[in-house]
Image (tube, rainbow, N blue to C red):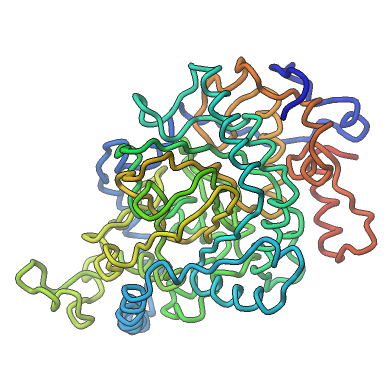
Length: 505
């Protein structure tokens, strides 16, 4: 329960006495305000937009990425298609059983056998369920509190507009309390520990999760409006662009024709990435190692839930290499021959086409543009989830939701990703902290009046008094403790940098 009545708070009430002791005004770059919108803003398939012809500079980009090693790229494409044929057969047969699961209690008490088995599956499949991160009762209580918050604030925007399934809410009491829950922070630490940094001097801490204020979903039975098809978030064109993911050379092995050596779990290369070059309304600029959500309902396959493609690095390699290749023969008459490796060759005249990628939108995929992924059969449902389960997937994972919610009850989640502490993420926290103070959408999300006047919004004082210190640090409203004796040297240096960026001196 929330205890004493709460309401809107003053614009600068973030600077409570507890915070003023350490907080100074940091120097932050000027960022453009996002356009108004909703969750459909970054999905052409939801907003009704068509894929435009990309400008010639993208043809030049593709030439630079492939020039001088065309034969190696062609050979790698043939190897990849052969691997995909084998993998798709495995997925067809195994389906949802490929999704690894682990109990939160096994994480908490470090069950080595269970964790080792889980780790191997997670690294291969890029998706996981941690069971029972919070109790069913706690999760259901948060959902009821959400519903009350929505009823008390009928001006709340959502998508679809007539009968919302996804709400433009970021600072409801339930969301704040869920993100702050010590079990959830522990689950995020555990998941992020599966990443590693080749550059040992890279400033990044997976032991200190930071908050990313995202939306929530309460999808009613029968809904067919929130029908997200297969997609990958955190940019689209940026994955090919030299000043996007190219800034960290994230996918260089793939573009060089050596996709087998690409490591999706290497973190230091992603620290320089710019994933939102076009300031899109909903484009993610923060480094999320995992996207994720906390379940607030009992939901099975076909009931408005998540679908994922458990191919990870092979699927990533495929959609990144796809724009460089074209079929020799097309049309239904060719049947299975169409998919054969020897029917595909490098473009003779390089086009500007990046299949499914549009500036300022997410990367979308479909069976026409990406035929070898066999998406009709390789997009599998996650297993049954219950209130309190946490579902997470690697930031490069292709995912979707059921086109129709054919269940009887609502399909409800709070979107809560797992984000490490980095320089860029700390800089984002500064801006997100201001948004929290004002009750505005997070900096990555469509602009608007937000929740500034919402009834029942938690005051900063309430938050400071009712969430743990670790959760306050995750929100950027409390100083990180860099003096702990058990801290690795790199973590200590990262915490010191984060305190400077956040203005704690």
